[in-house]
Length: 456
Image: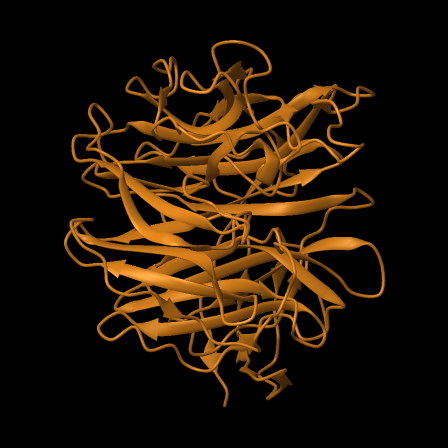
């Protein structure tokens, strides 16, 4: 499928074409441009330093147009990951020691500020690309961050991994001391979890409403048995992160323990959380729960459709979600598909009944690491995939709330080894796309197409 550089104008004639099972949108004037604050129209901007090993970028934007980025710092270029010792007869370690870095890009400036470390002491972050940090903003300009961190349980004296929250109330100049979201576990589950951890409360998600309600979720090994299934926990703040309610156990131990949770808000009171349940004979099934009352209560999990994926182990996959008016959108990897890849599905928020899924990238040998964001009825999906060559980042627009999609586009990244895209939106209706390129975090603005007509 033809690709275009994200920063160039493309003119396409209206040609009726089919791609997989998606209706394709033919665009009369498809325009992708960098925002006015970008230093050069055709270039991305590095958020992390070239001599550091950066991983798992995430971005958010405040009302003034400032782009805020966080990522895991794994050390200087050439250094190996810091991990715990192999244990129990040489089994691999589940411990990791990294830092969480933050930088901001002010409107009109040439690029990102120097980064700062969020974790108080070096090496406190339990950092992997499969357990990302999360960043979000609210209308008061507050910046909210959750991330997985290392620690010692005060109850067992054993190494654990927990979920931490920190916020900035001055636009990213300073961040408050992190607080631990999860309670401390009484049990020592070292024999089950192995790899040097006695408990894990990680794979965190966060969604923040415009009014400043902070909703956090994580997978929790408290109560885990030999079936190796996690519980889903929830904790929220109704005052912009100043105070948090007590944690709540949303789902019992029926969750896939290593697939990161995702969450999104819609308006002041509607909230969605997606996790991967284990059903039947080890079927790893993505599901979505909705709260219509700001997290006071949640409906039953609703499965997103797709071929049942039976797996003796955790797939280590992230689900992406976004909302458009009245609709919830899901994009998640399914290894049972042929070829294995990302399935897109949508449901009306009023009944949460998902329509049949669609392959977002039918030509890919494998597609993974999804991200989604929306502006009104315009939906942008991004992911990494392989198509007759090395892994690349791809993206696709829908202008009608997911009913139809434009053709797959390839992000122009040269010869870099790329992956792990992340998306955010700006107040002036742009998308911000971040990704990892040769262990450097890159960011650019992408505008949606100016016009388009769906051909069916």
